[in-house]
Length: 60
Image (tube, rainbow, N blue to C red; front, side, top):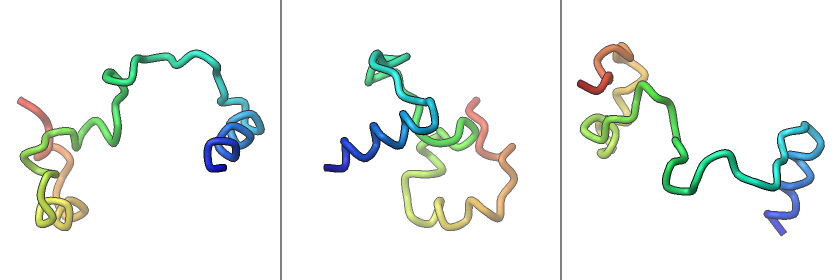
């Protein structure tokens, strides 16, 4: 049922495509500046994210 609803939502807003633009393993999830697992893998890191500059999360 959820899949059906998502398809209609995407068709309504014109974002539906039959073919994915990327392979499943290449899809980026989340924000680019917070990709480093060192900062976002633990609860404490997630809780303090809003109070830190995004520059401190850049990958080296």
